[in-house]
Length: 395
Image (tube, one colour):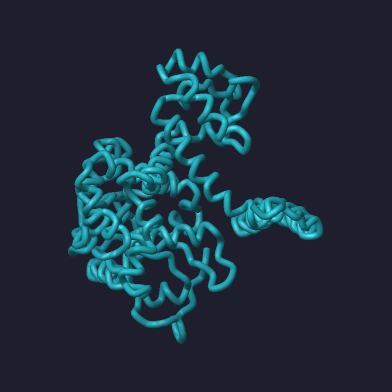
């Protein structure tokens, strides 16, 4: 391996950029620009780490990430994470082995990979403790997210499609040929002719894991504070009004938050998703005054004249043609005077996209969806570019 030659000038410059980004984040922490400032800080901190590691070492970082993912998944499945006390209290490998039945040597060797840079803390010889970064994996939704990441290396969701994407695109002559039922996901899983959702729904356990992971993903995004729901709906809603229809709303966690924030606003709050999702949710929604409704949004919308058809983080799952089909079904159902469709999606900047923008887009690409730029959003909803159209106002 080439000898590491530290570029101290570059490191010093990166450190100065991190310091400036910290100041910027601090000044914008309570403003609408806080997420942008946070991403800038993350990007500059990453560049600092990269400068310290150097080009050759960064190649080996890919192996480190793979090892860490595998080690965490092994300990997660073995019950080791649950055996470690929360709150920073340490426990020995022998005690963990006694509690879980997992061989002590197996624990020690895996923990060696998970303490130098986290997420666990090494408190002494063969002594381990949780940190906030490891404790979060005890939450069911975050555990589901991690399972999706790792199942990658086995027979499940996204990872195989990413890791073997080169095979798919070579087969396509390196052309951007990605269809709803023919894409890297269907190539890897041998399910051409099915959508990812159709394929996963055949396994209740995998479908549940996907639904839980979507809840966790939503926790990283702005939720309900971007639109004046109450002032808009309060003058219009009556007890028999379809006040909000959450189209493709998954677990209903966002609709629950909306309903709680709209205390005193009457009407029906309706959660729509595929029958398998609604069944998997169980009866919990009804206890919160939410009406679950099995519905395929490619079919005619059964709720006519709702005040709001809320389409949140749904359209990025689908190609442009399917996006227009979904919106067309809603348009037919709208009351021309009172109804509106509210779409919540990410807008990727043409320049300066974040790492999160990029990895989400490539994840969507594996099964036919995409994150979209402003131009892409116009193309997907109208079939035309943004020139001459009403600008999208980011919130």
